[in-house]
Length: 89
Image 1 (cartoon, rainbow, N blue to C red):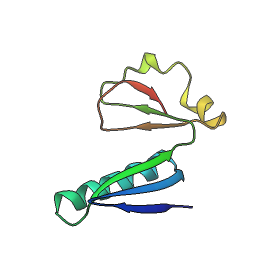
Image 2: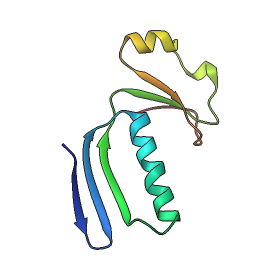
Image 3: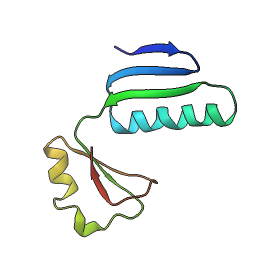
Image 4: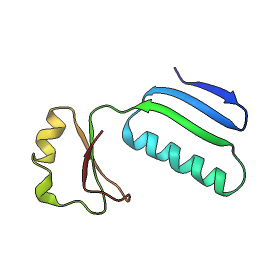
């Protein structure tokens, strides 16, 4: 169950377990609200199910298992526009 705590100028959202793509979408919406001057500073406290992200600097040889095999093991793989190589979350 999500909980939002108003702490002065910053909101703290305790979200529990959230799939990576959903959390990223939420971060993007919060960022756009801040850019538009429509939202407060916000700290998201959450965890993801097992996830591997492939950043802009990712090298295919650094993903040591096939995405299909990872999916069968319950590990999601997402290509992301952020920096970095292969990251496990």
